Image 1 (cartoon, one colour):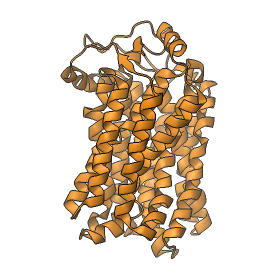
Image 2 (image 1 turned 180 degrees about the vertical axis):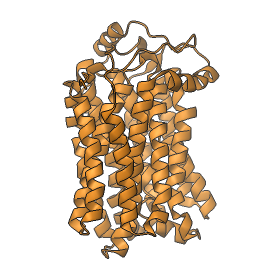
Image 3 (image 1 turned 120 degrees about the vertical axis):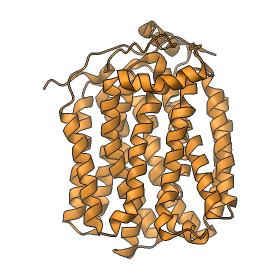
Image 4 (image 1 turned 45 degrees about the vertical axis):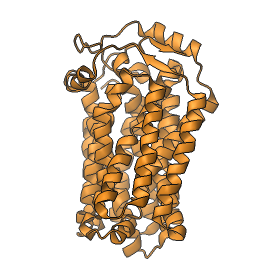
Length: 428
């Protein structure tokens, strides 16, 4: 099978008379870049912001048992602490993120960051498990600001560097998730989990002020109503097979990712006898795999996205099998690195391609893609604790099977045509 050049991969979709038709994407890309160049400092700020927001949505993962016991939750419900946040994230993607194609982007982003501050503060003060789970749902919804940052970066970047920029900014997603491990474990062990969430609320407040001072305004040209835009999500999914293929594969991979990182703390505690600091160190070691994201983006820019994606999926399969066959702490560390690197590599390639599919529907395309693969993640975290009752072999084999299914679909991916990117928007 021929390998497609993924420098601008996808298919042009005509979704009907709902404000989705593409204009002159090449001209708009040039005009956006000329009017608002994306500097390395801004890319760094966007990457850091993505990491901070993502970390806040996953602080509860490594300390779910501690939080659950303090709030009187049953041990069987500990996994819901993570799952509830992921479900909230999907809800936000489907019902709030589409507004990124209609409303001024900076104002919408800052609004979501303010909502995050409220949700994190509620989590810090929650008197019982029900309020805490509701706060987790709110944290998940407001965390869609991560995808707003990615979409904004993609629109601001030069098409020749888009893969590298998207790779850099999206690296903050998995990096933040994984840095949540050591940060949550270290801080909660010393001052408690409630101050952890309160501190995060303060950090996000400062982040909102910093971004307001450096990000430009972006006003989309779309005049469709909110109901029309939300209603168009199904039409976009139905009429865009490339979106469906990439979302499915990433859902399988992220399901394995969430399965691994939700079950691993329990395995490290019960089987290897690690304490909170040891678990935090494990998270740092595993998190190093996310550093591959900018490299994956550059390779995608060079037309090697398909190879990078397939290699990433294969790495996740190999990692889970390694964790099953070799019952050793260092083997588990290597598996963690490979899982993070593989999931991140495929995500960078896929998200870059998805953002190229229909330029003026970028926020909605991205929302559908992320929502689908986070459903996979929520499923993975939900089944992690029940599976671990049958031993780590059950966790590893289910994770390997999910990644193998993604790889099989990836190998069967047909070559698709190139398209240009971006529609005119008003920047100031």
